[in-house]
Image (cartoon, rainbow, N blue to C red):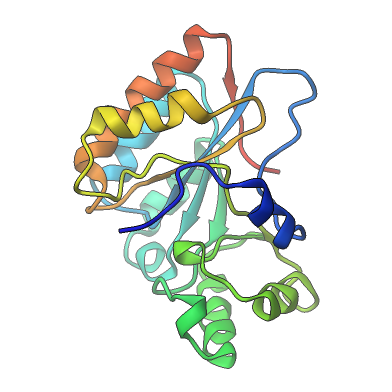
Length: 208
């Protein structure tokens, strides 16, 4: 499995119209994000951990999961977090016809009220991103600077935590997953990351 834990400058430049990091304004700010939820076990765990640190985050939700667990979606909002569209059923933009891809996002939008979008796997064509950023969608397409890689079953939870601890900096958008697949690593890596950066004086904010 190939992926980059930290997004290189040349990829950010190639897709310069997408959001890769947030302005920090000289402050110690991190932007934690969570993909693929809501999930009945992982999402409540994440919310409880975030509350311990008075942290805000952004959850890129799959439409069918919101449809199945509407109470968890409502809790995300009530707890002060932001949500984003992550398609209805986790489509790969590189392997999906443009019309089908956009329709899948429209269906998800019936359940997810947000102007934020993140493509599953980070895979989106330049044409798709152009269409989504323009009317009638008007999405802000949010990518990331640092991957925890908690989806990778070959990694230990401690390695996932170190991926973030060693590479995140003020303004970094960091990706975790509140999913069944990632939960074994997430449940150890996330508390470690929150503790580490809190001790360094960081605050955790939602993407705006």
